[in-house]
Length: 268
Image (cartoon, rainbow, N blue to C red; front, side, top):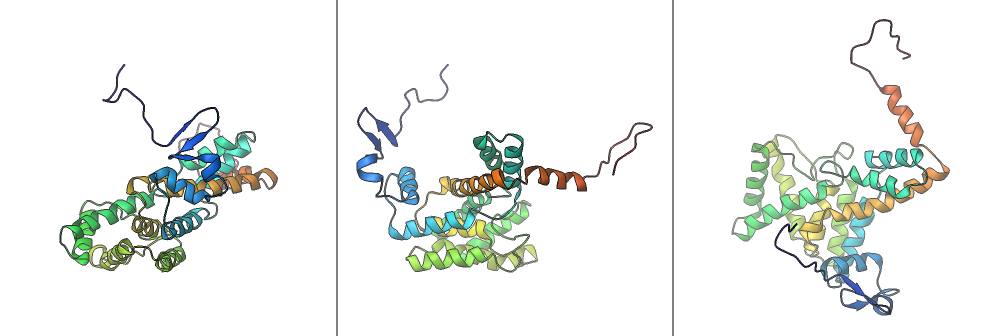
């Protein structure tokens, strides 16, 4: 059954024969292995060209910034999955990644869309402040959350924001989106009636978009980074297991609110 217009599968990323593996037009063994860092290779696979020194510095920094943040839900899901199925690290990593969405990790992609909306209005002639005010007001009117702003722990300033902005500036990267992100932060109190500080989910697209990273691929950055963090947690789980302890801690605080049959006695 034909679905869609295309009938022939095409890809410009990789091909191979008996002697050679070709990636983005290069011989993997001759041109890439030992000559590219992983981040450089990732960007090249993604875009078809090698990153500049500034782009590579920014990409490396963002991957490091988002790899680890403690026992967040995705990590707990992964560790509990490995505890239940010790032979399936791949399943445990997948369990953790499936918990990456608009609230945790995926907010970077949504924040990128927000920044791009403001940038498009600037390109049409609006000032940065006006464009930011219009876009943020639309989010507020629609009762949409403002991705990349506010953090349950880092109330005053997410320290990763400062580090990423400094890295981008030192690398000589384009800071247009950084300025947009800061301008959005400055207009929020007028619209929301309270401050919502930039968090890492806004900082990541701010520096990556300025470095030439594709908007449509932004969600892949935290997924790639957190995969490494999950593997570290799962390795630790193999010799310092806490998966079942996490489950136990959840049941300790659990409160049943449904009906009970006659004669039932809770063990709480």
